[in-house]
Length: 49
View 1 (cartoon, rainbow, N blue to C red):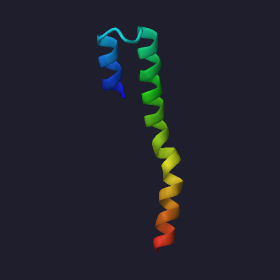
View 2 (tube, rainbow, N blue to C red):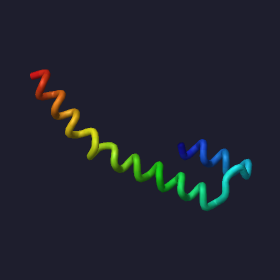
View 3 (cartoon, rainbow, N blue to C red):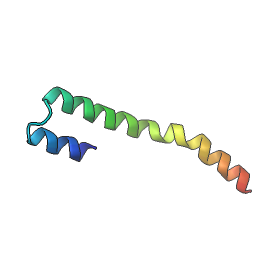
View 4 (cartoon, one colour):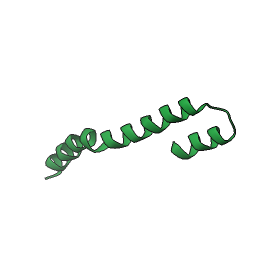
């Protein structure tokens, strides 16, 4: 996502504000991945045992 947004910014397809929004969205979704996936992984581990 970040690389794609950077390419769009370099080609002036998106503005600096849009690039910042994409960057924050990518960082935020990355930070939320572990808290959202952990319960599912624990549930699957319990089902396999």
